[in-house]
Length: 205
Image 1 (cartoon, rainbow, N blue to C red):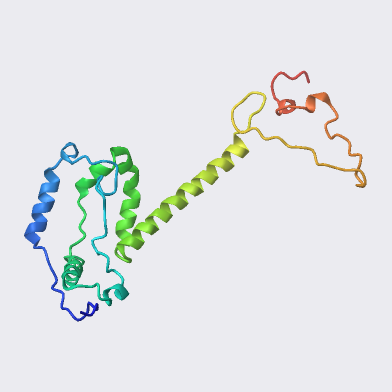
Image 2 (tube, rainbow, N blue to C red):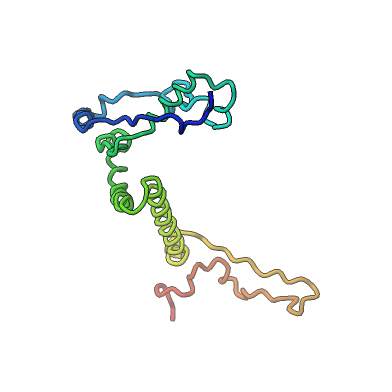
């Protein structure tokens, strides 16, 4: 009644190419409106449990509670992990269910990048790399947009939109050699000028 798995030969299950073709054919003719609509739940509203059972840990399988029935279930579980060489296969029509046309449009470039990366790394690693590339590009353009707005879209006496930046005077306390520091704005018009003194119109020069 040992708990080791390598003592049993696990038969590899397979699915024929004809069955795969039938599955893909059914998926192609199915339109999104005919797809089942489940509740917003990873398990479609059903209480879920691990199909691996209570003996996922090898130490648990070495105990007396690991019965012959549990052993058969363990063998069946291991058989289910042997996928066909073509699995997991993607069904392109499923993207119409999960993503609307707008999302499919802007996801297309990185989808091509992910397919290219799959030739050099695992699917999971390619998916993570694709997300990192997308997040980096979004962050880069967000920083560029913010930098542009702060430098070229500031409000002035003609244009009230954009980011308004205020500068506070430096605090100079008694005991500092610069105290008392004179106000650098000596004229009343210098307060909230909004670059009006550099105007090219309405001048009486």
